[in-house]
Length: 123
Image (cartoon, rainbow, N blue to C red; front, side):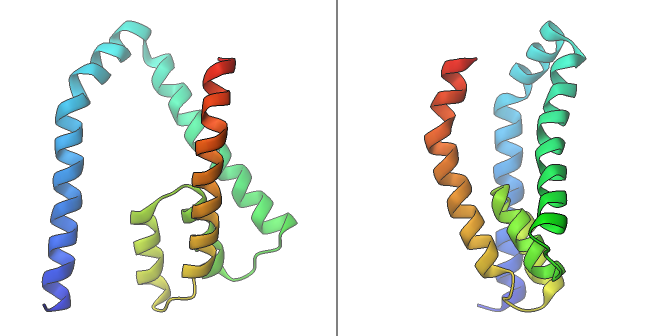
């Protein structure tokens, strides 16, 4: 299969998944936002952005990541962001970001599985 056709199918599959998920949960999300106000949305933005920003500073200044491709791969893996990783690979033009992505992806998923019930139990 030509790579262009393969990329098209991957993109259409991802878009279809996002559309179906949005259609299934959209009304619940709107009802929840109307019930709890915009505060819920803003807390979601903070919970999403603050860990990523802290991770960026930690990686840059403590771990001293100098290679942007490796650092971007590690950040995408830490967020379990496969679409972001695909774009990192496209921009890098090689497979260099694959190793840091795989490592941080595995660690993030194991920690999420192990620590998720603790977070729920304490909240």
